[in-house]
Each structure stands twice: as structure tokens, then as C-alpha cells.
Image 1 (tube, rainbow, N blue to C red):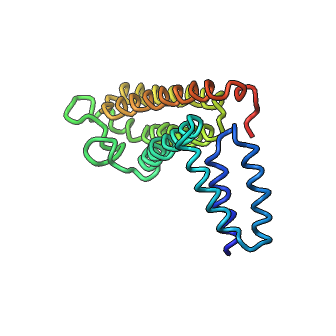
Image 2: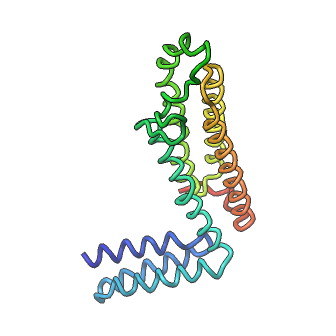
Image 3: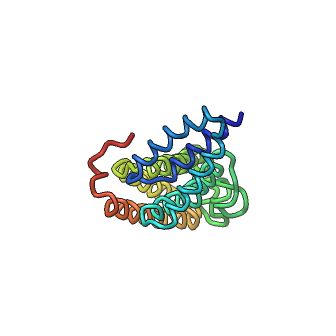
Length: 214
């Protein structure tokens, strides 16, 4: 059990190291196997983790890694959870009336009686678009950690198209698109932030763009 915990700590330490510390990471793993034989794997792994954290705080490459994880864990994944929850579970937080997608129909207009049936039939399609946007957030988070910026760019274009389609459909169906527009604005800010992180990565690691993500 202690060895398994130590291996998990070592894996975390390795994840905290950037591309320029690959040789150090490999050396730590070799020494870790020796520590296992000596019966001190957890102590050694904890020391490696502390050293890796120090590296993160003192070097620009480390600050880049921290920023990447903060963006993934603090923004992309929570937004994915919110989008997927609204699409699959009907969470009400993004739409008026606290009734999820079904509360987005503008009430009181002449179109209400005429379009209600059409709108009810369109809810699965609208929910599917929102689900795609949520899944896109998860995939972008994964690609960011893999430093696959070309994949991030392709997926970002797909997500932008899905968001624009959602807003367009809601407008055509006389739906309250305020929250959809807000989501589109948030998505734009997210993708702009990801672009800045990608440029930062290119400046720190000029040769990384020619490598294939592993």
C-alpha cells in the first residue's frame, strides 16, 4: 500500500515538471526504484514532490505549468460540468424561470401558442448542442495538458460553431437567448485565454511545436 501511494506521489511530482526537466524526471524515477528496494519509497517521493513544487514557483516554465493547471481545473472543467449538467440533467441555472431549457420560451407573445410544440420538439437538439460544448470543454482541457495546441485550435473552432448554432436556433425560435449569448461571450474569453497560454508555451519552448504530443 505504501509503495502504491509513493508511486502516485511520484507521478504527481513528474507532472509538475515541465519539458525542460525531462532528464531530471527520468533520473528521479530511476532513483525511486532504488528507494523502493531500500524501503523508503514514500519519503523519497515526498522529497521529489517538494522539490518539484519549488521549481514551479521559481522558474517561468513552472509558473506556466501552474497557470495551465489553474485554467484547466478552475475554468474549463467547471464550465464543462455546468454545460453537461444543463444538457443532461436540466439544471436551471443558465435559463430563466428556473426550468432549464424548457423555461427559455418567451411568454406572452403571439408566437407562444404557435411555436410551443415546435420548441418542445427542438429541446433535444438544443440540449445536444449544449452537450457538445460541454464535452468540448473537457477535451480542450485534456489537450491543453498534453500541449496539443493544433488540436486545441481545431476543437475551439468547432465549439465556436456549436455555440453560434445554439444562439441562432434560439433566436429563430423566439427563445430567450440572453444566457446563450452570455455563454458565447464566456466561451470567447476562454478561447482567447487559451490562445494566450498557447503563445506563452511557444515562447518558452520554441521547439515544442515540432514535436508530436505523446
